[in-house]
Length: 300
Ligand code: DO4
Ligand code: MG
Image (cartoon, rainbow, N blue to C red; front, side, top):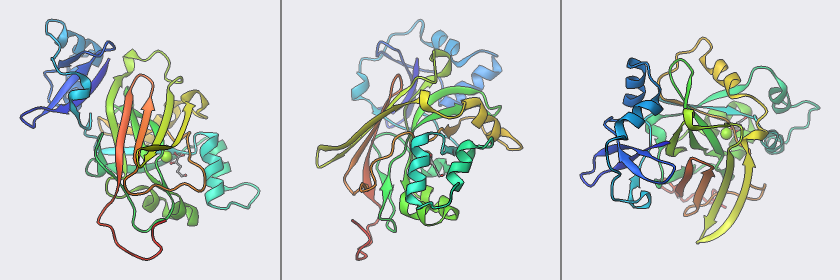
């Protein structure tokens, strides 16, 4: 069972349940956060609340493809974990031209304490089919396709979603202290298109993740990986996020990238990024330069 949110004909936001057979049922909750709150008040899981809500109703006539899907949740904060896959560690060493025997990335990959950073706020976060922006002061930018955990304020995993941790590799590679600038800017984080309720996931360490990038309608890049390759457990990173911290209902925690395009690749205005995760859907976003500044040599 997945939860989606779409724009109704009256331009209102409508929460809905998407069954595994593809039927869409309207839900009597304003938002995913309302559903979470109701589940807590009634001491029930989100799944049983959703099942009770739809049991006597009919699915809507529109097909999923006809709906204008939007961000399925309004997270106050999006956090992210880094260097959780070998692929990411190798990529970070490459972009930072690490020469020491043991780089900071080698250390954090092995350390007990994971790398966690604030990735985005609600206002910087976009949903499906809305443009992700690329920075005007970077020549090396990529999407980072990641599984996202939707958390309660107690750190319970309520659902799984897809996230794009847009990243600037040259800014991050120049100096690790530039990480916030390499990660956070307007429209640098995309989430959606659905939230799969955790109660309906048999094995969260077996999500297949695929990323495709199109330029001029041609597929320029495709690669896949699986959450079975994750170096850490979800509980581990959630525990560190919650330690001495205030976590809000609906916080999304991205779990790190396992797919990295080759060194010579950088995103360009007009590209389209697709991130597919089995059982969750496809998060598709066009790429756009926000207010393009025509500085010589800035774009490749
Ligand atoms: O260390 C920098 C960030 C790494 C990251 O975002 C990832 O591994 O996904
Ligand atoms: Mg990342």
